[in-house]
Image 1 (cartoon, rainbow over the protein chains, first blue to last red):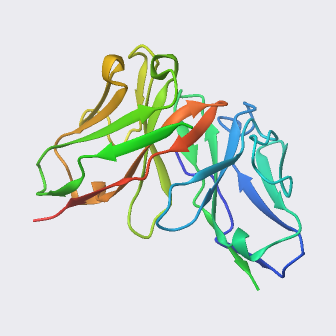
Image 2: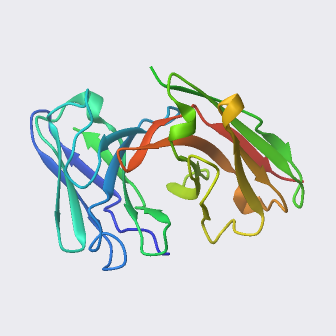
Length: 110
Length: 117
């Protein structure tokens, strides 16, 4: 199972919005509403921020939103803040009853 | 509050074995599937295994199939990863996580496994 495709890095100024894409195939992203997104600050445990493509867990800021079209899912961070600097990973269920992550995107707040 | 406490990491020689543990608190452990995810140095997250609430079904990534075994002891609220025939490329921080919301949440603090001679 090949990793989902994410941009290596995305940057933005405080207050701006950024979008991270996550491209898979009809064997994973395109076939199930089971894409999740994780925020990972190095040295800490990853944190779930979006599940089932578009749902936000209780306690996660409304500035994080998910969407999907075909084989590509997206994470949008609006009102960018310095605390949003982290690595972000998408993950999808696959037709093999396994899970696959994206390669990760480093978000930099300029 | 759900908490996952991991233990068992360390240095092991290639071809060796190691067992990781993950003890859960703050949830009805026997009603949740659990998963293992790892991150090699400088690399991204990689899904390793998932085990059902009652101990089955169990799924593995191709990279560890036949070498790693996931198990759980619901009486001890504990999840285990038995790793055999370890290779250099298995060097990573290993995380356990609860399978909740059809995703992984929350995660343990991670256990570092270093495979080196």
